[in-house]
Image (cartoon, rainbow, N blue to C red):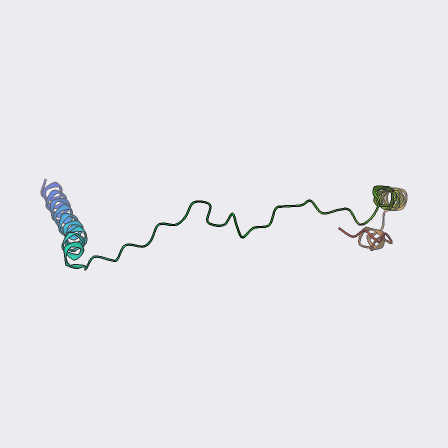
Length: 106
């Protein structure tokens, strides 16, 4: 019974300390607002502030024909497939970590 009363008294004391800390944390903020001088009002920002500065977006024109890019991708896929097949046929650690001869690198 004595332990229960001690725990009850300690809990009440902890609640009291927490309430005082909360009041101390929130109390001065209200009085500090009344002491601060009023800030001068800023002029209103015009609508679409950045509209005049940004040039219209023009999609970039491709520099290389699409056929050339597709051919490079197909060559890369063929080289990677050949490397995978050679690893499946003869799995070695050297083949696992060797670099590809393709100009396209991950």
